[in-house]
Amino acid sequence: MKSMNINVQKNILAVAIGGALVVSMSASASTVSDSVVEKQRAALEANTDGKGFGPQSPRDIDQGYGVNERVFGTAPNRAQMNLCNIHFHKNAEHKGGNFTTYAGNGDGKGSETGYVYDGKLSSSQLKPIKGKACASKGDPLQSGDTLEVHFVFSSADIKPGPTLGACLSDSTMNPGLRVEGQVIVLANDKKAIDFKDLTTVSTINGYYQAPNIPTDTGIPVEYLGSTTGPSHNETASPLKVSWSVRPEVAVVDINSVKDWCDDNIFKEDYSHGVRNLVVNPKLLSPIN
Image 1 (spheres, one colour):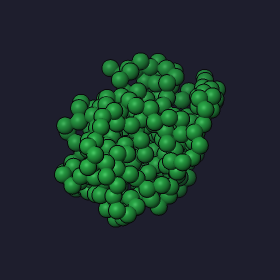
Image 2 (tube, rainbow, N blue to C red; image 1 turned 90 degrees about the horizontal axis):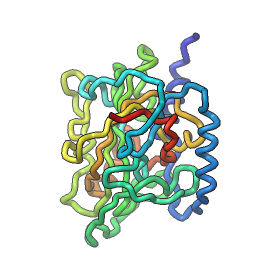
Image 3 (cartoon, one colour; image 1 turned 30 degrees about the vertical axis):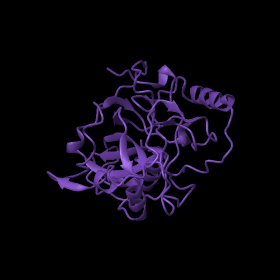
Image 4 (cartoon, rainbow, N blue to C red; image 1 turned 90 degrees about the vertical axis):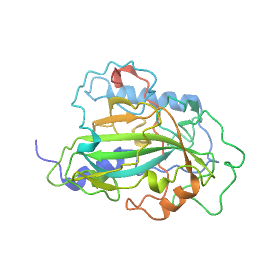
């Protein structure tokens, strides 16, 4: 088989991991009916049945059942990989832990769907902020919003940078990929976690790392899956990803998220859309 051009593969990865080209749009967008989501799931079934696709993401991390038989090697521990990208989705793509409240079907294209924090913030934490946060595409973030943050790691010899093409290199066309997932809820609270601290990038033992990924938000649920994003509501992702998703939500200062969107090495300044939860057992790996 001829090798895929590196630029083509980077473009595929940019679309595939996290739906990087699909944004979370207006909260006022009309909500589609259940039948639309059912048709999308039926299309995903038809487009994958007998085609050999591996397990998909996102999923309910509280449910371990899955019968997908495409097995691939788990990516190394993130300490032995390079951080290549950090981005976030408006509402959690995964379901489980203390983010099981369904946000609704949204517009059928990744906006205003997914799962939100089951708990409550105080009235002071829910006060609106001044200015617009992360609003280069779509509506600004608001106090009380739930986000799923993806820390993407690659086995390739790369540096962290803009777009998910940063996870590939000319010398490594099929790197191991790992995503560390952390769901956060945004609070207007200077005492909450500073997002800039959470996303600090350091070099440790020769690898680019995110040393401040929370260690107090529950034991991560690890499973084999794929890239996400609403571009895969009806077609499977062909890429293989080792996931670690924490089941507890972290409370983060929305003001620090706003500041991060104004200036970060990943050039991230908006929230990405959400892929439908994958529920077909044939497209899910078993979780031990």
